[in-house]
Image (cartoon, rainbow, N blue to C red; front, top):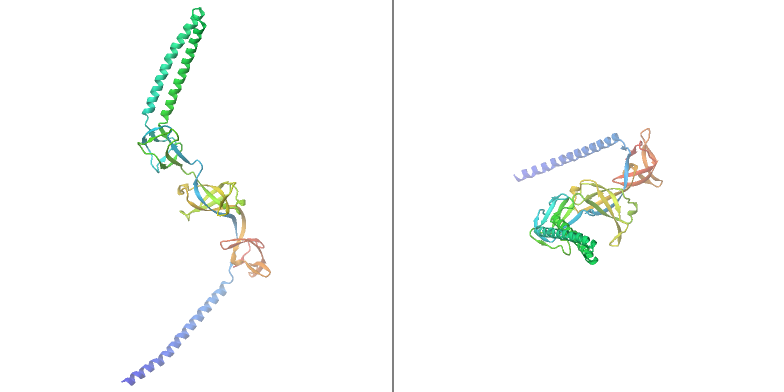
Length: 359
């Protein structure tokens, strides 16, 4: 029984060898057929020609910067008077209009002061009336020779003093009225409340320094301040176009214009930089102060003829491309190249926009 099994195994091994050989031959034949098909396809496709593209090329200066508030865009609002904060109408983040009431100081002390000033005015006016009557009477008596010149002059001086007292009293009424107007604290600009440093019910003292109630940031009053290296600042001019991105919006490009270049440089880690201020044209609502920016400032731009970099070749004789001849054959042309960017190279001389070049 074991002899039969052994014989059967030898037979299967002999049959397996031809089968493997057939499989290898079939695989080799398939690879050759596929290779022949690829070669035939490449032969039919022929050379790949591309058309040069005429486009505006920009020379740019790269810099980093931050979004900042414009000068005067942040206003600290304080109290002109001392007193108790009776009402506070805003909180951090509130939006206010110019002239809107944001707080009130307790008006009772100021109203009492105003009433006292009015009473003093009335008293001064009564005194003036009596002094005027005395001066008129003394004038008649002096003319009749009844009183001396000294008495006449005293009556005139008393009348003049009473007039001055009335003027002082009127000034006191005006001052109290002005103070009463300061009881309502109004927003000098429209914007957003950035901070509130006083609470309702607190007492403020304005004797030595005006206490700050709130800080208002003017809406959309933002600009970009970029630091440009001294090697690049010579090409930057006011009015130049600029674009920038932020860490918050890396895929969003914002546009602006250079408005100011600081005349004095800033030295950071031994490198001289100059601050360049850029106004922002639109989409200011997406930006906030202190955001980091990556800035590109356009220093020059010109029309250029561009071809893919792979089309330009070099050898011992120089730089050249293969242009398509009338018969469709590659024809060598010497060219002069310029700047490169994003896989393209500028052709300065030796090629026109109608010529097709070999890739």
